[in-house]
Image (tube, rainbow, N blue to C red; front, side, top):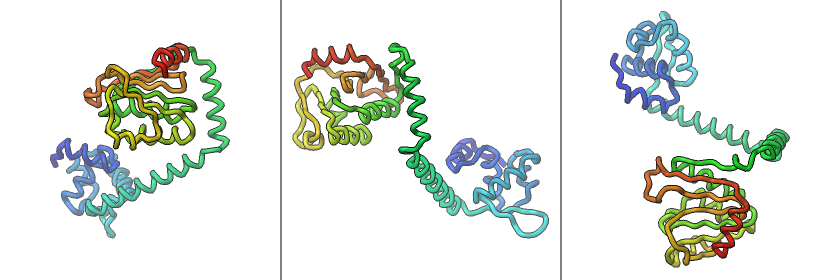
Length: 255
């Protein structure tokens, strides 16, 4: 049975590996079949077919037909999708609960101690990193904003503000709520509606240029290296802890 690579790749979204996907598709094409027939149809080695079919049964993709010889029935795809969706939700909820339970726990305390000791050993020249891809760029920027204690100076564009990146926007708002001074610097004036959206921040519209960067607590700086029009896959940024440089830059910009 010829199975397109495109279909096999799509099947991976169901959480199946190559052998599992091939056997399930083979069984779907037959409705009911034996292990030997499915092995011949799918090209999966007979030595692996039985254990793979057993796994498919446990995952809810197939059922074992009563009687001998042993044959297998395919579960309708719509039902499989619902089962997979339910399992993913349950597993995600369980993992979320487990992670939530770590807050304030001895395990997290020990991990923090280990990290703090490691930070003390880091050479100043190592307190820097680069990021490629818009998701990674904003992931780290969000973390910096989330951990801010005193001040956040974000220089950006009006377009970026209007997009209101959910994670960054929410963390900026939360930072202001806990007393962090949030300042937003843009090269042009902004509409009153946008000012209201960012009512938790002070606006400065007198800056020049189109660079985008963020200074946190006069301690670290995060700089976008690429224009806003760059394709998301190639968006790049650098971050570094540089208290002396950041403080001097803050004075230079009269912040």
